[in-house]
Image (cartoon, rainbow, N blue to C red):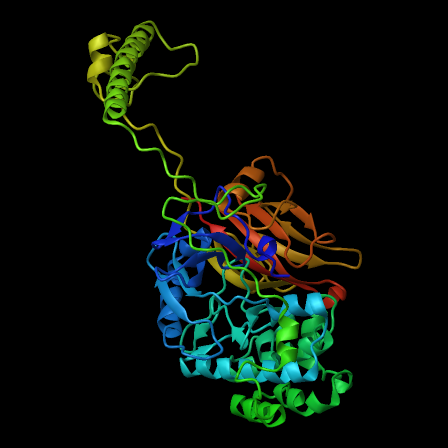
Length: 532
């Protein structure tokens, strides 16, 4: 846990080298919003750079929300938050930078060392509650507080990842593959689509504390529909928790948001039981024990350095400085370069002449026409579509850009569409219809449940998740089935679809409920790339 090889991974070929002027030193991880990298300020302080996925960045609604979130996050100043220090909301792609916290997440710490003792959880709850106070004062509801979004620093926890938080006056938004909140840590009102308030984060705080004490979610495992049903309709068994923390966690987990403890209540309750800190504000030794060893953060890289491939045993790596070049060597290199340019020009002229000669007698062996020929060409095109074939035409005509592949259509995101026996969907208008006359329908009988379509082809994906337009477009080229059995489909499964009009869509399954066919449903995030 948090060894350099695990926490800091070398940059790969598809990773950028510089983002917003920050030289990237390593890859820290990836999530629904994008990839996260390690970098440093000019003064050498480590920062975490989050680069937004291109699919999200292409959506104007996401851009607007991202700008609002950055403006709100700049106002957050809390001792237990990872401060936002820089951002590029208008960049391609957009990015943001927060102070890097050198410590494991709560999820990693529990996985590595097991459940936390009560004193450590008291420190955890007090610190996270203070962080949420600062976040709420800035007009933000976190919405996705969970063990992986709580980092364990030397002096207490840090709450991170406001990537799906919303300013309280903003409109809810979810893009394909990015759900608003993690289901097993949702509050009842969040799981049922109700009003989200700061009390929603208090419920998640109670669940996060219970996870730290148990090593597993309080509402248990199983299918997502079953977990969500328990969160909404049942009371958790708190007898499995240590007796001294049951009263506080019970208040955090009250079904009615108005009856939950306030964050000020949580801080006061915990501080009274922690008592005065005898170790100068750094927390008791038990806190340091659960964190494990301090990871060694890679040093800042020079402006021309690049991480070695993953197989290298030595990184970060800066190439040795080049030997200074003598004046005679520089002159020789320049002369050689000029000679090469002249040679290329002569060869190019001969090639164009050859092409021109071939064009005067018909098509080339490959059937391709040279630039400047054909019925749609400009200068040198005859009525029959063949060029004059003279060398003069070939040299005189400037090369024209070849037809390019059409730009990727701008995606339309429709979050958490719930398909059931009463509605349907058309890819051209992805809002759900309240009848069964749409093209794609969910059906669930006694034997099996499936997606069916009158005209769209449906194709399940078994490759790595995170399909793009190009992936779906390629994979659908030979697809013919209008029927998709849901037997092998689970949360996270991806389905590509294409209708007769050429609209291409990606459906990401969030919840599948088929145990009771009479009330079965399928909740999917939908992204549609409209056909031009």
